[in-house]
Image 1: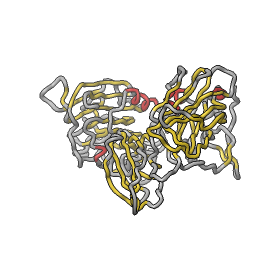
Image 2: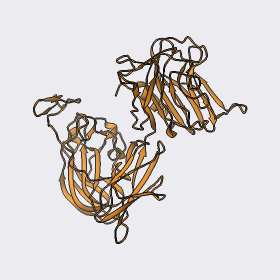
Image 3: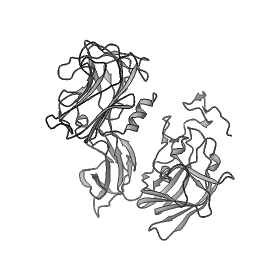
Image 4: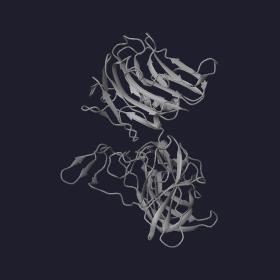
Length: 498
């Protein structure tokens, strides 16, 4: 067994980290700023143990959790790969095109009790066509994982511009004497060359914001301008602008969508140099209000989509009284939260709303929880009952040809002075209402939600009349531009504070 140890960053004074785990020097910096290269596919010629081999190149489990600019890998086995050792075992990575590689970064197998299953040594072989292979590094040495959630001291293998479309790790040798060998994550970095290479968002990034997102790339010598291309397919790029800067601001993007982009360098004289195509996926989350503030009237949007909300009237901050930390308290007679409007929140074909609420008193009909006008969608008290309802205007229920309105009503009581999680989804074919992670009502329906571009999202009161005020506490409100899964809703219900 590995001993459990406390972790300090040292200098003067000593500092205890959020994830206390290992003794490390203070003010460490990332060792490379080279562009990341997206991995198109991964395969291994042996059965995987526990998870798909793709987990080592999809970014799962990798995040800058302590804000120091270095990426830590977690200890979850589902975010790693492990296989039985064999003489002919290899792992093969395919890149979108042949790319000059500056380096490979490896986070080794980070299970706290099995770090010796990590790779100690391997041969790194490369190919530009998939048939002819050459050895780039023989007997490359890897470092053992730390076996804790603060694992950020990954192995960096320098390739110095070796060009590759495919990369193999062969002759894998682990640190231990057991029968298994594994890896947590592998990242490839492009060598900066005479073409523009994507820097931000990194190739393969997910959860990219849909508003105020900017593309950034590496400079090209003698370039007088850069042509920027964007599209929803690698073969369907269109030019969206030209700039003499190394940055280009995008207009509002669609949620939960994969975009491809490329930057071509335009020299003062000579031929245009085409850049490498990169990809990123936007977040499905278009707004997220946590209500962790204690003063003022502004509520920042934690989704990164810049939908700042505003407290109107006698709405009170309730620090320490929320489902997660703070919340807002509404008095049932005045006050609401104005979340304003944007095209991203004008969800028409699909959507999800998630909210935590604690009712102090259901004393008036149709008390509003959250809505986007009476003519789009709303979640509210169901008349005078101890229940909530989700109303969608526009979609036609499968069971009726006479109405273009979906009404779902919960069966579980919610006015008991306890926190309850309410979620509502629509995917273009079916609407569902969830209470505390359980689907409570659902209906097949088709058609778009009525578009109301100028209608604001409002929390705690009726949008159209500023009436039907909610009496109680509301916390952690999220709006998605897509219908998230039942499993994702259950995760929101089970989740603790971030």
